[in-house]
Amino acid sequence: MDRTPITPWKPNKAQILAARGKFIPDLVARNLMVLFAGINPGLYTAAIGHHFGHPGNRFWPALHGGGFTPRLFSPFEETLLLDLNLGITNIVDRATARADELTDDELREGGRRLESRVRRWCPTVVAFVGIHPYRVVSGVKDARVGLQKSMFGGSHAWVLPNPSGLNAHYLPPALAQLFGDLRIWAAAEHNRRQVS
Image 1: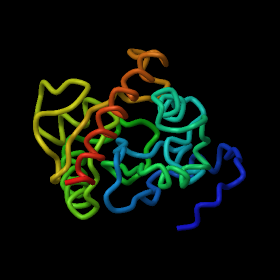
Image 2: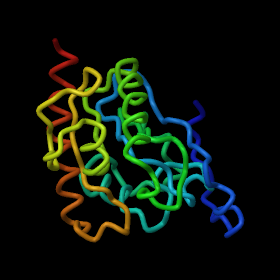
Image 3: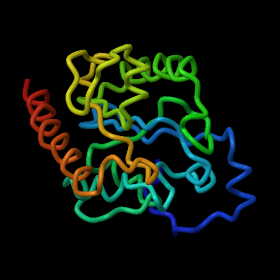
């Protein structure tokens, strides 16, 4: 995979509307420390072709604030994550204007596909970026943010809040703290796995 960052650009309204139903390729390698699993691409994200691409999405600032990246990355620099042992995928591949356009059946089906991918890729941790989708995919109705009791596809499962700008329940400092908690735990577990 070419890891040369692409010059950032902004899609126009027609490009955003034309992105409905498109998908973004997974950013993945085997044995990653953390594989972030988003819900599905938004239209802006699908239009530019880079994960968590909307300017209002707080994923990239939370990733940096949590200590995963040495500086704030742009979505157009996403391939640099592979050098940090991080990857990104989605539960559902198709782009929609809002995540609530997805049905629970579609989330469950996407979860089965994701579980198969996780078995193949073997990340130390799968970090679900959204509580509700994880509850649907796992069937654990009372799941909370943080490390989960059950494994997912043979990897540890961790739940993070949805970093969308539409999710006002978590302010940026709280998101950074939660991402940092994941980083500390995942790094220790990943190192332990490498030694054993």
